Length: 125
Image (cartoon, rainbow, N blue to C red; front, top):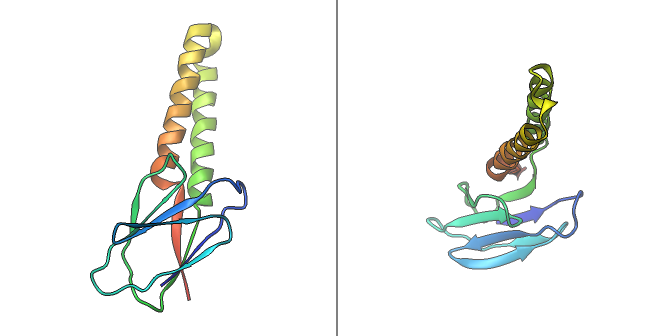
């Protein structure tokens, strides 16, 4: 099994891949070759603030790429924009305290969104 990690926006972010609880660390552009057998557990996590996800298709000839989920990030930015727009039209920004609380809530929602869906695995053929 070959796993490639690409992250063009941040060279410092690394991906952690576990093969039967053995940790491997990948940086941008690096590839990892794993000798998997049926029943092996392969998981990955990108950065410090993301969920651990399992790679379910396992074959020695399988090729995967871990990359940013651009569609999810676009939905996240659209959600932030809509929340800010809603707060503007409801006059939520009149109070400094309310504005600060609103900004923190919007940021927390966005980060939660990216925690679960920020990166995806793509099968390469």
